Structure formats: C-alpha cells, structure tokens
Length: 119
Length: 113
Image (cartoon, rainbow over all chains, first blue to last red; front, side, top):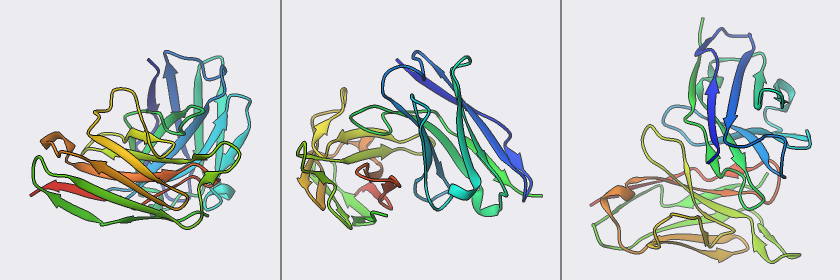
C-alpha cells in the first residue's frame, strides 16, 4: 500500500518561499503512469489543486498559482516537492500531497501538513 | 476552468434514511472517446485527508460500503447514501478530472438529524 508523508516548515514569513516535500513509501514515483499532486485547504474551507508531476516528469499547474509554483521530483529519494514563492497570508492552509492513478487523480493522500504564513 | 457547484451546502438526515448530494459542472466532463465521466466523489472527516469514494462518476472504490453510489452523466451528478450511518458524518466533495485545472465543488456538510 502506497503511503505519502508531507514535511516542511510549519511557519513561513510573508514574501518568502514555502517549500514542502512528500516522501512516498510502498511504491515508486518513477514507475507506472501516475500523477503526483499537491492540494491545499485553508482552515474551514474547500480544496484547491495546486499542481502535479507525472512519472515522465511532465508538470501541470493551476493557472491561478502557476507564476509562483514549482513541483519537482527526486526519484533517488522517492520524493516530490512543492515550492511556492512570494507567499502571503492567503497561502496559509493545510497542504496535502496525493497520488493519482489512471482511474482517479487523488486515489491516495498524505495526512497533510499545516503551513502558516506570518511574520 | 470547469466550475463545480454542489447542492445543498449542508444536509441533515436521520439515521437509516437516504442522503442525496448533487454536483453540477459548468461544462460536460464526459469523454466521448471512452464514454467515461471524469468525476469523482470524496469524503472528508474532521482532521483527516479526503478519501475517494467514487470515480468515473459511478465506480465505487475498493472497500467503500455499497450504501454509497454515484450516478449521472455530462454535467449533472449525484452521490447517494442509501441508509445513513453515524460514521458517514463528513463533508463530501465532487471533483472533475476532465481538464486542467482540476477543480472541486465547494463541499456539502452532512449531519445527523
């Protein structure tokens, strides 16, 4: 069973870069035809897809965040990462990583990691 | 962007009764080439990540109780819980994966009456 675990700073200052890593166990991020996504959820609100990376290395981003987002993968560590620059308080949320299969984009989720943007 | 609109925003149902949640997409999520609707339903309980219940609009994920069912095609979809159990209290989201950006409905909060 694939498991995902997010990690990274829980507090980021405004205008700085939010950096998170998702460590995958029980499966390889470089095999198959899967997508590996980042999704976020502000407290008490709904879900927003940030972007994804395919096993081939192809990336797709939400246009609303595209200018500030980079998703990359480190296959040697079986991890993929999110960088969101120029953050503001509006970027405060729980950030989830997820694995997509050919049937559904978010089949497996990490537990989520809360990130607060504050000085 | 495809906008997903759920109704109602909240729902209160008695134990053992049927719960119905609707989801409407701003454009069709049906791929004519394979006749599949790229629509999923998720359940999120407090403090937990979402869990997929249904994909391709009507295919139940492995391990999901058969009281959960999905229906609909094109732009109009429904999640039905045939006999509400206490453990079904949660927020439910529909999500389209027809096109980028992937988008979710605003969520429907389901409570026990």
